[in-house]
Length: 479
Image (cartoon, rainbow, N blue to C red; front, side, top):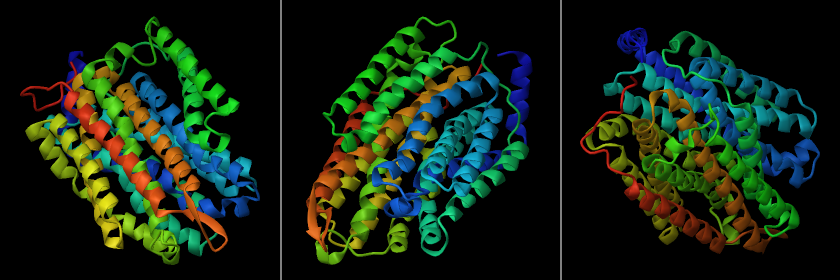
């Protein structure tokens, strides 16, 4: 890095408005994670509200997950090339446009288009982490990254009661107008509080690589998210995943030979990065498993033998404290990262996830059992999501921070998409008759908990395989 860039970074690290930068980026992260749970309270009512089949309305959720997974690594690379702050502003603008589109739409097509645009905003989280690396001193970086990482769970957990309240007491369009308002507030916050970029990559955008990644991921994620509806062994499902895998293999071959690749796969193949990214699938699966299973477990009728009979708002309030725990733990996560390093913090987080699901598997006869288990999941996600970006940033060059964190977010998205499909499939296939309807049995929830334990245990093992950073306590500075 040149002396001018170094002086720019030193100037930014001394600015008295560091807290404002972190707060603005965290707010953008909260907005993005809120998009995942925005329509959760409406899922059962969407066929009636949109006058469409349940098969069609399921795309209101699926499309957001697909676009989020595809857009995140691409937006990370765009940030490295053209400025991270600029790309964050563009993503927030897409959130506003998508929210307004869905709010004024009178058909399911308009809502799906709006939800697709909303999904793109997920890229602000890895971009925000990359901006923090560029402008914050090492002594503040760990805590700031922990706070930014926590927004992945906090926005959804805290936003769910708000979405549930609006769903119960207002027109469903109000949810999308709320999302538009949140995005509109985020634009001036980022514009005023986040300094301009001091680090950028050279080169050009690999358009062919971006298209290839989008096509390949679409095939794989469509299989994951829609396979239960199509039939896992149906010709459509198998051809979709086969095409996706073939395209990704060709994409990888091309990336290794491209002059300016979208993602440097040689860097991504470093053991610390590779094991962290694979473990991120398990952590994403564990996080979204609770989002799928716990609300249904809490809301199903007591007489059915499957649930606790809470209403939508009560269930959301039981789940919400996990997100608050993630936020409160941010300073502790930053201190632990500086004290013991990110790898032990990651291991502690994955272990907490496993213990949480073991607890709820053994004890789930009272509401407080679910509450305690969900708090433990909040601790595990808070620690592990804080550790993963720090491991990545210690292992990649500074000019690839945005793209590398975007790749890590992609793997988390694969985990969340998988959890949504797998948990939904289990709960739909293992049912009992109650009131003339098929509802998930208690055995179905046990299977879900076992699957989450397996995902968490796999992430725990992978965390132990990440190479040690020795006595280093700080991420490598650019230059």
